[in-house]
Every structure is written in structure tokens, then in C-alpha cells.
Length: 423
Image (cartoon, rainbow, N blue to C red):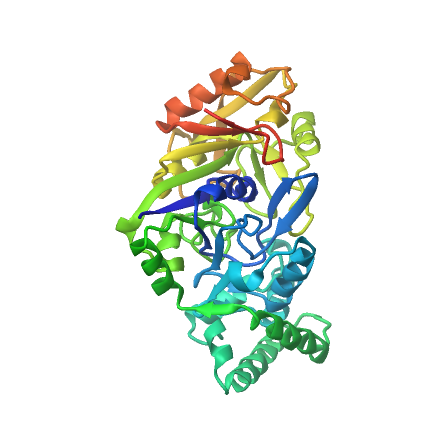
């Protein structure tokens, strides 16, 4: 049984959580393969809005097993709060939620290091969520990190103390004013470790291998978006892990030839949180309207998202890098009421027109070239069938499909799981 992947194709916030929730009934296991609590997956159903940060988005389905893979970095404090927030829904965490022993832990001092590093950059700051993600991945690649499996060993607190002391010395190196009380942070951290240890720790690569042999269906859930990938994103304004399809192999221990469908999710327009280049960003009333109608605020940080027209150059790049087999368009309803829509189909890049995603897409190097489409007035949020979609939206969809040579199988017309149209 192949492992299917679900990935974001832009700068994150595409709506992955909703679609995982929609698709979960078809899968036995939902496995998160990278990132940390800097991601926020929003799900809405039965009139309730849920925001998940580390726990996979299949947690609300009664039969699905939810696995946090080795490629994820876990903040026990945030993880414990997530469990507390979900406790009123009578979820059996011990049965439904499993954690890879090889996943790395975010320590309180990782968060402090993150804050010190960002403060030291001044105006050149990356726009970190300050969750300690980057420093944790640095310790992972530097072979200093503490993993979930270490919590089962008697000397793990010694390893913790040595690493935390090293971090404090590094914070001093940045020479910025970071106020903190480590004893208070550690008390909260150690209490949260107790909650984490109530769950089952597993050798997840073996677990998934056996699940495949037993013909269990598996959906790998990505966090952030492809343009935030540490290798293929708009570096250095990226996250610290591989958000693309290859990250599922390293983040779960799944062989490349075991990958099945690759679901690529994108918004009908484009958004970005934090710093970094954004060729199609709008600074006018159209951009304000997208932000207002789309409720474009980060699920984790609450920061307003920058908005712009759909960037087909970037989208085509993400489709190629990931080997996408099916597309899913989100937030088509947000574009209702625009008299005309624009799609970036090429860049003027350093005096030449290009249709590929170049090395540097900072605004001084890139000017978008647009194709204009007629908009539609119809409210899409009450639609239930593909035959009800307005002609102008169908034209928009068909243009995208032709450009990308990939079918759009799902169109989302609202945040609720029921506001989902299959084509």
C-alpha cells in the first residue's frame, strides 16, 4: 500500500488542515513528517473552529491513528496545551496518538535562542515565529539534540542540563537584551514532559513499514508550504526543514518508491506571513479586500498575512519539485466580487522574461507579468456541486489546469469541511 502525501504549494497557510480532515475518512493513519508548532492547521466543523499546531489533523476522526514522525520537532509545553484544549472532545489520545522516538524536542532555551538571534538581526530579521524551531533543527544537524526516545533513558536530564547550559552561553554571545526566568520555564517544561510520556512512543519507521505490509492506508501531512522549504524555498526567508515531498521520505522513513498520490494544495490567490520576497503582493484595495474577506491572519501567531494575485511561476515550480499528481484549490470563495482577476504567468527577471522560478525573486530583480481574467459576483459558499460553479471560475480553473498539466480535483468554497466541492 503506497503512502499518499498532502503538501502546501505556496508560502504556507493554504488550508492543509481542512483537507486532511476532509480526506481522513479514507485513511487508517495520518502522519505528520516535518516542522514544529510554528505551523497552525485550522479545521472547522459542527460550528467549532479548531487550530492544531503539532497534532496531526486526523485527530477528530474516530478510527484514524495519528502519528508525529521523526522529522517533526516537538515543544512539550505547546503539545500538552493542545491535548488540554482537545480534552473536552473526549479523544482517546493513548489509542489515537503516537510519537516517533526519533523526533527532536524543543527546549525552553531553544525558544530563547530564537528570540536572541532574531533580535540581533535587527531590520534583516527573517520573521521567525520565535517557537525555537530553527535552533532545534540546528542542534539536530549539529548532533547535539535531545530526542523523544531519550526520555526513556535514566540520564536524559543530564543531557538536558548540558545542552541548556550551552544555550545560555550562546544567548550571551548575541549581546541583546532577552529577559527570562529559566527556572519558571523549566518547571513548565518538565511538567509537560510528564504529559508527553503518557502517550505511546514508537519506532515509527518500523510501525509504518508494518502498516504498509498490512495494507493500511497512510496519508503523510506536511506543514508550512513548498516555498518555505530549506533547500527550494525563498532562502533565507524559509523554515528549517524540508517541506516538499522529499521531506516525507526522510521525515517518516518511507522509501521514495513507496509514494503514491501527491496532493498539492494552493489558494486561488497567494499569501505570505512574515518577511521575504513576494512578487505578486498587492498594496491596494484589492489586497485589503482579500485579507478582509479571507480572514488572513496566521493561525499560530495571529500576524496579518500579505496578499497578492496567484503566482503561476511559483506554483509551477512547486508542482515540479513535489511531483504533484492532484491539485486542490482553496478559498475560491474569497475571489467572489472582484471585477477582474490577475494571474502572474511570467517574470521580467533582470531584463529578460522568464517562466521558471529563478534564484532570487526579490522585488528589485523581478516584475510580474499578468494575464487578466473576468471575475464573478456569485457567492460560492452555499454551492455543493461542480455544476453550480460560475462560468468565470471554471475558466480560471481550466487555465490553471492547462498551465500546470495537473487536474484540480477539489475546490474549497468555505472553511467548513462541508464546503468542499469534488470535480
